[in-house]
Length: 366
Image (cartoon, rainbow, N blue to C red; front, side, top):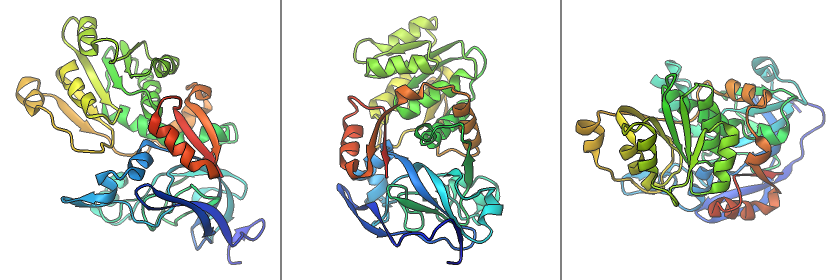
């Protein structure tokens, strides 16, 4: 054994393995062994993300179309939202990351190349050469398994013992939510609308609340999720299935529209809705991974309103902020983590996320 560990790692483990759209299998898989600078964790909890669902359902981003190669590289173990206990440290890894055996740790979802133009500029979340995100790529197997490996060029963080494991699994989505709010450039007294009250939209509500908007509005088709959004800091929840939300927001803003609109539903209709709801010179943040291309009237963006359109990708430099928010108890986690299931129930978990009727955040416990 050429690494530090309390006991030797087992040879095999249970893992969910993606072979293709709707072809995910629970099977025996080799336990990763750490090399220099690498970390192995015993996975304690792993979340099922909306992007995991889109990959499972065969979305073009992951499996390709006539314009692009698919991002997913099967066979691969899914899972990029996770927390684990450090059980093995390769040479130099403990010193490099400030980790010890027994610590709880997370790794940022992207493992950069550190060599491309973007990585050299510190813009590692836009890595050009590899863009390896856990759970989709051959170099970065994910956390739907008993054990997972953090490569030597990963970005790892120790999770304080004051953050419960069932909450720590939310660090990754919360960090993504924080970055989207940063991209929105919210000013004091802005009227902010966040479309979608799923795990990411709820994190955006909590982060946007810290920006002190004059009015923070959550939109969702579920009244139950809108109540959770209020617990996260929303002043008002509106259900587009029951009211004309564009008209309501205009009434609340003397006919101008909201200052900031963040799209976190993944539904094409929410994009057009936002373009009509937002005021002239407003800021529109597009966060979602869409299953199919979205067509809108670009005249609204340009000649009509001169909007600021910002994308939001991953969560650069946001993990420490997310950990701090969870430490301070700024989110009603007991209402956000709705389902905790064994790894063997992964298919049931995927189906729960797909239905969206009774769940918010579904997690698996290997």
